[in-house]
Amino acid sequence: MFQLFKLGAAVVLAATLSGCITESASWVSEPLQPKASEPVSYLVGSIGPQSLKQSAADNQRIFFRKRGSEYGAAGVWKMAGAYSTPQDVQDGVGAASVFVLPLKPGDYEFYDFQFFSARYQPGLGTVFTSREAREKFNLPMRLEPGKAYYIGEFRSFCLTAGFCAFRWSDQNARDALIAQRLAPGLPTLQPLKLDLNSAQPYIFTGPIPGIAVDAKP
Image (tube, rainbow, N blue to C red; front, top):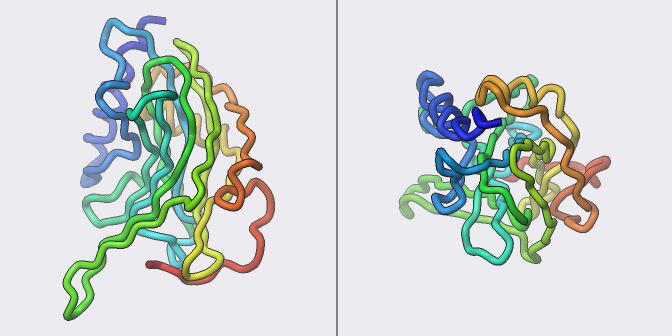
């Protein structure tokens, strides 16, 4: 098992060696990063826009935190030239990045997301916009040492110019292959069962309601 302790560094190295890509899809705050002698759990998934043309924002994140703590982690998709995350999944319309989060074992929660953009507007300079869940949801997760958990694929879409959300799907077989390339020796992914219905209207597990519109902020 205790080859697993070294995989956190492997994830970072894989992102660094991926050509011109300089941003990792995996972010973990320092207090939650296991040290070389400590056990580790992994949280794996993917995130990105269902349609690049109708992307909610150029920087998209889903947030996790240790229960009872201010420390957290995030799965990230970013499209910003050389500062993009790896576009691991490209299906001709949309794209997604696979994240592998090495975490200290324990109780966590999936609680929020962010759509963030920075755009230049003549006369105004750089204008920053950020959208998060207006009402935070709280999906508990227990991560045991030596195990890797798959949380699913989160594809963003916009229903209106002011409301964007995610559609969840199970892409375990596809994402597991990518995650193994990012972190060789990663344990077999176990599905992480969450009550995603309680996160509506921010996360949908079935058909998308209505018609998505071109709503970049």
